[in-house]
Image (cartoon, rainbow, N blue to C red; front, top):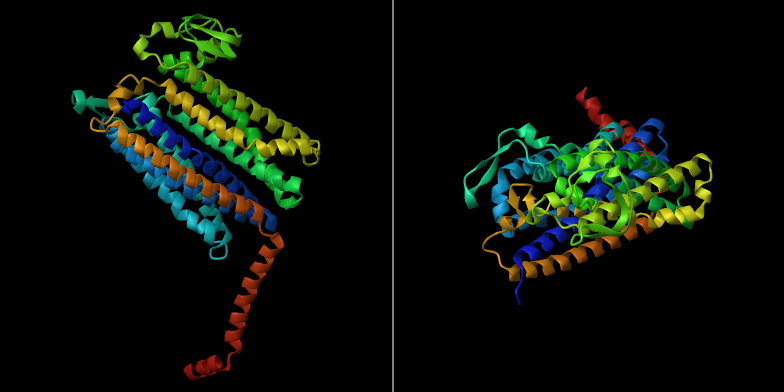
Length: 477
């Protein structure tokens, strides 16, 4: 049986990346929410906010640990399956990944220890600083990884050195490489997507508690903070997505054409709400379209001409079906999350949110929607870039390792699948236990703090009343 190395390598890398990407967006979202909650605690000294922080930081730490474990595999795959690609982009990726390790991972992991274990060991302000640093670490990590990935879509600030198999891209302008044409909007898209995922995760758990009649005050306050973040982030994501469409239109027009099933170059290019693209016939079947909307999003003019797939050589055209459906699925989910968050905000304003049990049930199950939207977004972006692994410079087929064969790739894919399934089971089991256990009682937090203060006072008083200590002091005098 013939095993296609390219197909297997792409499936393996897609699987490991998509599984890993279940965790970083949640770290970004929960990190931001932890900063908001602890800021409220510092301002009000209300113990309920301390209880909220202590609970959600445990979830954050669990998510962070699994995310780190699942991210290591990808670096190994660069060397085993994609050696030619790694050599080609090594100077570019090396600088970005080194910056990610120095400025992001160590920052996040170092301060996480203070965040977890420093409640009664450092001052509240120092602990809040640790929370901010952990949030920034998660965000900076997203920045540098997105920079490296964005360079593959819109390369800038480099030159090619060498010929043939020995060719490689070297950095000539570090800041042009970092701030390549697509990096900033793609970074914002990732971060805001993380905010949405973290917010809906928190609202799902909080709604579950409210439906069960448990930890009501904790759940209400957690829900409101997350709802406000979601209500701000969802429309912001729509705006960022529209700006990305302009960039894709300029630098990756074939990808934009695949996103929208746009086969013929012409004015008043439509956006399809749904449909089934048929590349053989050059049309979208069973669909509904809005004429001129793609021209407006891409060019700012409903009558502008947008390039279709017919302008590109067949060997340079991306697949259409998967990017089309993934892109439209992402937009549909984003629209749903926007409507749900603003409906929740409206009912909160009218003081009917927590009495609407049907809506709370909807929030519980909607936790899956941001996960799916983030996955679909990456599928659309990466499949839409094909057949290029570095757009316009290096084809995916040319980036493979020359020595690797299909058998080892298939074996490692099966092995990774087993390990990742086990890791996911551990994550779900641990998360379920934490949620069922619930947060600490705020009164217990106060009692614990009072006991710590009392212990310190007793120790000081004991030293003052200790006859032996008093006698030693007399002798010293």
